[in-house]
Every structure is written in C-alpha cells, then in structure tokens.
Image 1 (cartoon, one colour):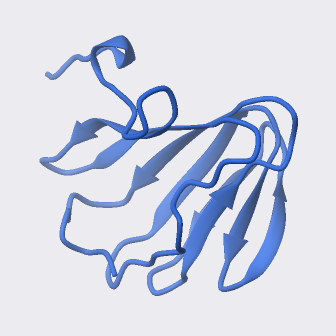
Image 2 (cartoon, helix red, strand yellow):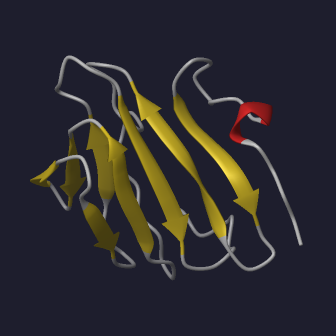
Length: 111
C-alpha cells in the first residue's frame, strides 16, 4: 500500500501547473491547477502508447485534442487516446482543477 497527501507535493509552476501524486509502478496520476489565462503546457504533447484521462474536478476549462477544442465543464471526463496531441487551457475567471490519470507508468512516453 502507498499513501500520499497532495499537500506534500508542489506544482511545477509554483502555485499552479502540473503535479504528480503517484508515479508507478503501474499507474501515473496527479493534479493540474490552472489559474485564469493559463495553459497546462506551452505546446500540446502526445503519448505513443498511453491513454490519458482528464477529470475536471473544479471549474470550467478547455481541452484541446489535435487542434479541436472541447468544453471541459466541471464534472466532465475525457479519455485522450495514444498519439492524440493534447493541452488544456483556462479561459475562465476562476481556477480550474483537473485530475489526470495515465493508463500505465511509462514516464518516457511523451513527445
């Protein structure tokens, strides 16, 4: 058994961005917090082998998959398939909190 608390981890961007809560051995997952006007990453990225699930826990954002934009309303869940380029943007006036789950632990599967 492994147990963690999200307060023990930091977002990449300091107060916002991506933070991993579990990395392996069989799953990779964490949180994304985007302040108004922020993106998950400067450029979209994809995975060769992994699918990735995004659950919009708090707030409304925009999920971008292969250049197409989808409303990521609070409560929405999206499954992004391997080789689909993806990013998330917050166009709202409130923070957006998202849980992400990668279907396997393959930290090098990113392009």
